[in-house]
Picture 1 (cartoon, rainbow, N blue to C red):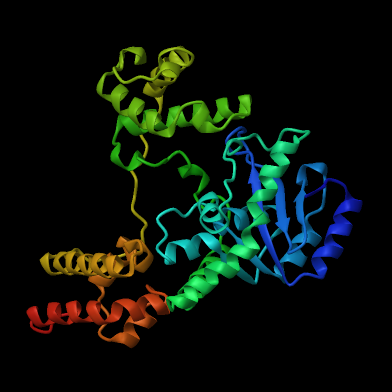
Picture 2 (picture 1 turned 120 degrees about the horizontal axis):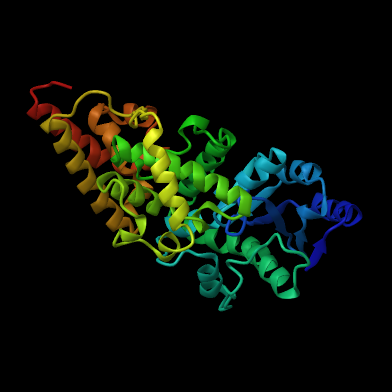
Length: 384
């Protein structure tokens, strides 16, 4: 394992990587410990070496990312790592192999990296540093070894998993899934939510009226507090608690938040006074608009036929997934089933061209799905 923490060492590492056809990649960030997430480490393994690169040493990662983009890259759970590198240096890989996707498509019950390494190499990887603050310097040898192990086994794992995928006839499934993931990340942009709607956190759709006003005020306070203390938002007050506080306070106006029976310790103690003050001040704030759905899914109102289609398609998906020993959502998400139920394809070509399915998904599902949709049309006397 080599730590790369100055430009000279990085230049040497680039020379080594230039000679390689493939590389394994992972990243570490500090979102569990700080308000603004930073890329703290980039781990890269070649067939002969493990490199741990320190972006916080002031290194320019641009040349590294341009070089990696041309390689055959292996990740375990590529989504996060590619996003971090894209934020940092506009990273857009051309070919990836995701070992997590492979494990999912193979029907593994345990799909974590440590699980795969234990299964294939009978090696137990330590999980002791999973929640480490990777922004702290210097990094001890135990942390550096932990980081290097995240990529050390990925290249040989690719060969083993690819062989198993080929044996089951699912290598094409995996290739298409990796391609779709890569395409979706190529179009990804940070912070897609409009600034004025950032406070509409998960669960806020269920709130109305005064509760929404209180939630917005609480969210604004939490944001300022997290910035000031340089702590993650959830370590100030968890988002679920913000929702619950807003709901309870709107139903119990003027009451001390400490009287809320489910109030956690930090709300009853550290933040009691300030939360009470924020709720009090929200009485003078204007109302806010409730959540407006912008989902581009089914636009027409569902009737019994659409609901029956959805249920039948879901049951068929569950049965096929059980036969294949994979998770049902790998075949089609519920959102896709809703779209198909609302606008059903009439044949295999229409199903493939709908954009709802990858080719392998359409191939696996078409027979049973089209049978269900045909029966539904027949029951409706030919109506779509």
